[in-house]
Length: 279
Image 1 (cartoon, helix red, strand yellow):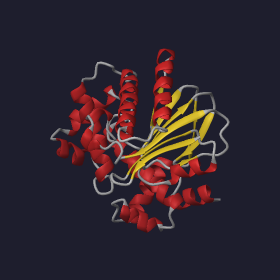
Image 2 (tube, one colour):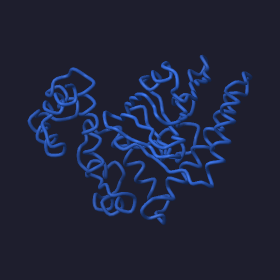
Image 3 (cartoon, helix red, strand yellow):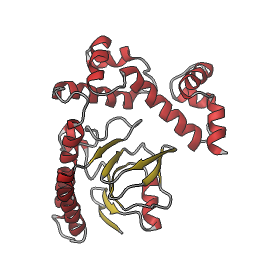
Image 4 (cartoon, one colour):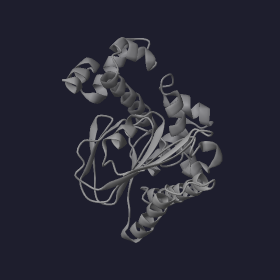
């Protein structure tokens, strides 16, 4: 199954698919697409950024355009919603559920939620309505599909935030964490210290270091390092750039410093990593 809504005027795109046909798998190779993948049975496996991820029944995965996904022969039933920012852009939606909202900020670890039994019927109903409206071609089709997608993202955001290590974290604090992740996403190639991002947020590095444990087990520095490493691994596997070129692209004036950083966190040099992944 593959159903698609698009508008040449607005350049927006919204797709529902179960990846049962070959063309649907090619969708994941297109640039600029956000992905919401719901596994409806156990054992749906994907390669995300060259690492295997397996979903349990009723787990939903949220991937940004930066996440490179490969699907082999699926052994489980999945349904996915794929859309670009023109369809659901950051200018027209609340920060929490936008394309840079809670579900999609930070790309080193895609967000995933487990759908409670009480919510499964409602999610299934919304997906069914999307499927139905995908086949109704009228002037209101786009707005109807956008409203249904927003409803799903709001409900998913509520489920994701409810499972935070410290549920009492305030919305203001959560916004700081989200803004930090968004700034890292924008500047990780040139800014590599927590102090750099603290200055952009008008916060002290200590304030950020005290805040992040309330949200996850990642420190602010780990967020920066993980994002640099993710991009480094992508470039090593999916480009033919030299290690020196990659180092420069990621803001390292000395390729040797980049290689030491990479080996410290990955356990091998960039060249060995590339050789192992491509062999």
